[in-house]
Image (cartoon, rainbow, N blue to C red; front, top):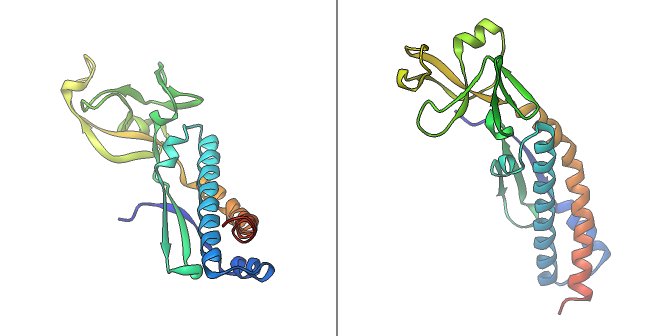
Length: 207
């Protein structure tokens, strides 16, 4: 099953034609200017999207940056550049340092009622919730990964037995979709500014 995600697809052909109509450039100068402008625009876009999504979700930027990928379909000025972000839920502990409370787990400003913070698979503590506990509380916490079963040896004294648990996640898709929508037009405007600068530099200043 394909991972959920959102993307921005950019084609710069129209903007390149507009820019070259205003300043004469050799094919070599044009190629340099275009490649630099595309690279700078995509880097600008990646930085701002990861910053804004991280801020909205209250998580470190590194939790978002590694989910962003760049790809291209087609070649030359007619190529389409695609910035894609995976929007499966983030693990709850990515939002900060988890604290166990009587009612559940708190991570930063987020509260996860009924959850517990524990190492139950030997790979470090994570934020978990029993499936039955979530149902009893009527909470719909996003799930990170698949539902699993806790081993009895990892439980606190008196908990005993095995029970279905799910790793608690933070919903990403809704906020990410809104932010990607805002940046589609901004990315096109940014390229327009940068291609003019790069063409001017390539023609008038670069040897």
